[in-house]
Image 1 (cartoon, one colour):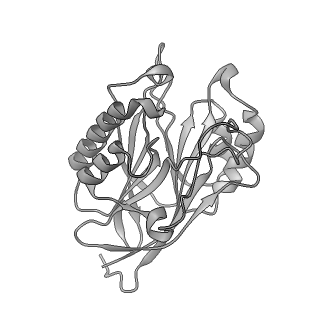
Image 2: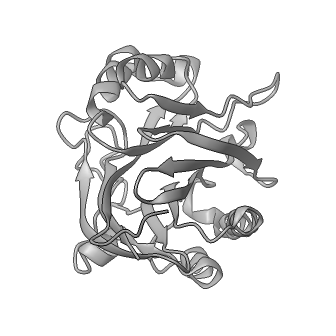
Length: 259
């Protein structure tokens, strides 16, 4: 592998697509038709809540040469709704399901999707896509989700730089967030780039969110540099705020990897 010298910068995106199934879905044909072209500029994209078959619109329109959708539904459960897209080859993939859930989350195989990418000039990059238990009352279940994620990361660890992206459904500084930080020591791209900006990804400013809901930052791009690499967060932004295509805003980041 060649040395990185000045490094290589990758553009990343995580986005909860609000792709609820069947009659629970809202305007999905139109919205999913917009999402595919909207994510096209990024190098690596993790999508959550692609429960609806309309995810095939994204598959066709996004133009990504390498994609993996975790279609693990069964007769009693939805899939985990996790979908990863990349401009770089996927050389390995795996998934794990969470074993606890409450309310509507019990009816989906929520968990973690793993893809290992082969990135020219960088080598192997490990990418995890996840969607945690929803609702503030269930912090103990999200701590369980942390346990599953941390064990899954450890099982696949080969020292590669690693991305942890998705809808974690946790607030910065909450007990489950502090637990995640203690377990994996991730670098939070948004907090690094904007330490004084709350960066709300679910907010009543979004017309698809109830007006009496509290604004929250629950979607994250985390980075684990690995022992042979250092990272620089060059930029982080909220995305897809106009037009609004979901009940979440997306989070994007530009990360430079160097040795």
